[in-house]
Image (cartoon, rainbow, N blue to C red; front, side, top):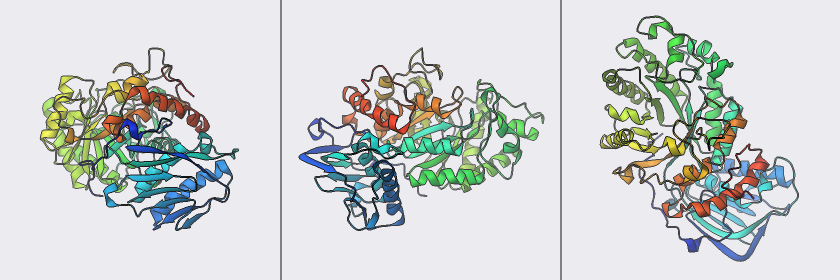
Length: 510
């Protein structure tokens, strides 16, 4: 796959006049105009048409129709050519890979894009225009009405991600699919999976089988752990791709490596395997930088992970390597990065990697808390030709508590209310960082205190849609006073979807 996380497309401008007062969409579209006096009503005779059908475009139509059949009870056949709801990839190339145009009038709904991915983004908007009960898994009573509107839309940034840590606590394939479904509703397009850490190794590596035979059976608190077989991982990758999300696998190095060190004694400097670890401390483990075997190990791991990953990025971690002498760290990162590039992938890592020499085209993930050192490293990465994904821990980390009474999560980066998680601009957060270097945002979720999907959903919602909007919508559209009203409208949708969301007191939930 080509490297695609570069300059944004030509963005349209958003004005207050272009937004109808009843707009409730997240992310906020670039432009939206009401068609006064027009209302579309979905009838039982409706069809879904695909103009210029391809396998991918037809898949978008099939997914959409299948969901609506459950809630409406209508047959909604998918057909080539125009339909009551028409999806077309005959749009101009100026729409880009993800842009789309949507029109709803009295008689028809039309989504036009240049690509199937653009169609999918348009369909996610259409789903939000329908009543919340359209998300139900059982038949509901109508009517199924949408107010007349036109929308032109495209993303601000090409990288809009969410991370799930499956190492501290393991989550099943079904859990990851649920996570993908919910994230894709808000036009996120990257799924970063944190697959290895001190507490467990979660991805099959045939050349080093003890990683999953031994270190997969551990997690925080001493639970059973688990891992993804190659078939499991392929299922996740395919499911994400069908929803136009790219999987970014992370193998954290040189720290956060106790699971590997416990699996293979020879990876340790003294030749003695470490015990499995089920606590939550960080910074105590390190690969042995001056051992040739370390790089033979990483070469094999990166090769097998690359073979399982169609996306063009592998994340090599690089954070909190407190037990790695700094001179060793500066030696290690370029050697590990060279192995990632050897296997045809771009290097991504937490901002600490920018202190070392990086290959051209690397991606630095900023997770600082407004501290000068972290910001300086992000700028240093850019001077080496790297691009930056913004994940400030004191704003975008979804595992931080909402307030002091939140029953889950941590607070080392501060308490993050829904307003705080939304009220920042990725382009201006780091002083003197060129705006052109920022390619997007990511909302990480670490799982030291989260061991099931109910707790995950509680911490993710309602904050994730706000980070998604920061990545998609024009800077001129980002306004808390209007966003919180749109967010309030999402509550009824989450209730229908069975999402265990936090009823944040600053939101007037509908």
